Amino acid sequence: MRALLTSKWTKAVLFLLCLVPFGMLVWRAFHNGLGANPVEFIQLTTGDWTLRFLIFTLCITPFRKVLNLPDLIRFRRMLGLFAFFYVCLHFLTYLGPDQSFDLAAMWKDVAKRPFITVGFLGFLLLLPLAITSTAGWIRRLGGKRWQMLHRAIYFAAVAGVIHYYWKVKSDVRLPVFYGTLVAILLFWRLADWFIKRRPAASTKLSPEHAPANSAQ
Amino acid sequence: MLIRKAPDLTYADVTPKSVYLNRRKFLEGMGIVGVAAAAGRSFFELAFPERSAFAAMKFAKLAKSPFSTTEKQNSYDDVTHYNNFYEFGTDKSDPARNSKNFDTSNWSISVEGEVAKPRKFTMDEILKLAPLEERIYRHRCVEAWSIVVPWIGFSFSNLVKLVEPTSKAQFVAFQSYYDHKQMPQGKYAGIDFPYVEGLRLDEAMNPLALLCVGMYGESLPPQDGAPVRMVLPWKYGFKSIKSLVKIKFQPKMPPTTWNLAAPSEYGFYSNVNPNVDHPRWSQARERRLGEIFKRPTLMFNGYSDQVASLYNGMDLKKNF
Image (spheres, rainbow over the protein chains, first blue to last red):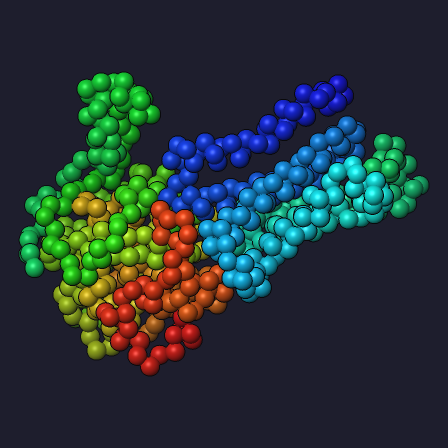
């Protein structure tokens, strides 16, 4: 397992896998497969994948600890950046086809409509995370501060779920599903943090949980 | 105006829908199987089209209507694969998939309440009730997309006159068919069924209000509200109730499904109005299917000349 996780090929394959949803959209675009409302199809698909990649990213830390697979950390940045990639496409469908690239109209819409406001907020939160995702920025900020900043992903994920929940008309199954996953992943962190605060309890519980040096 | 009798075929007397839809491919397949394969259909599908209770009927030589727009019509494919029909699922592509075997045989509409002559209309009676017209209407969804559809039907007022509403009849309540066995996805819709809608009697009597039995020259496919629905082009699409089974004339304003689900978002009137936004999104503009950028939405969806007088003196911000 360790060899698989540390192989450079695994990362390359995962990179290509992350591009599959985008590739599907391109393929559909050239094969008349985007349906009657292509803009909406691209908007919903990229929105969905943004949330999914945020959830994948949030899975890394719990999976590392629970499954004792610390090497999973190699994929976290890539998954986070793919969340950012899909949210950029999602935002572009809004700015372009929906708002005709009219920034003034966009700001008015963002200010007026709660579901847009919260979605836009989530997008803004991801922006500094994408910029500071490089090793250089981790060094410049220092590990602790970098880690603090990157906790913004928790709020971005919650914003994404609320954005989706407020957008649907009556069938809330999918937003509730994503919301449940995000809630589980965030509660796990809360519980983990709580256990670590009481070192006696944590060592008794399981020794693998002891190393607290990893980010997030 | 060209007046013609409805065709002599009865509603149950026609080709199964799936055979009908596949007919072009079927003919290709009869010639060269390879053509059919290239079209993405297996020979098995061609030879044994899936059984479908729904039957399509072609309407020949329909009367033209002065209400028709000359705007470019949307394709049949768009109008049949991008539907809001929550009984069959909430995704736009669900109704086409899940309504294939919708059984509309032995259909009838029951007309009740404050009328001198309450009665049931079978589909065959509805088809012969008045000369069928083709009406090419703009259709504006509350979700800010729109289409142009050549509907087939006649003014709803034709039916109203037959049943003779009493002086107590101020409103008309409509009800859709609902059968959880045929519509198992309905339980996830988040709204209560059967779907109900309503109009003020004077709105219902407006000649634009269409009792619709078909589109694109043929009977309605299930996902578009087979076999009979309302089309109210000056109102948001959800007012145009599908698969109509009950009409009740009454003194009181009837409850309506989306108003019950979210009263702050969907009013009883729900007239298309670019100046009154939905709480969650703007209604000023809309995306015509087939276009990338949005276009301005017109007051009453462009039907002010016909319907604006119905709302004289009313505050349309309050009565949204």
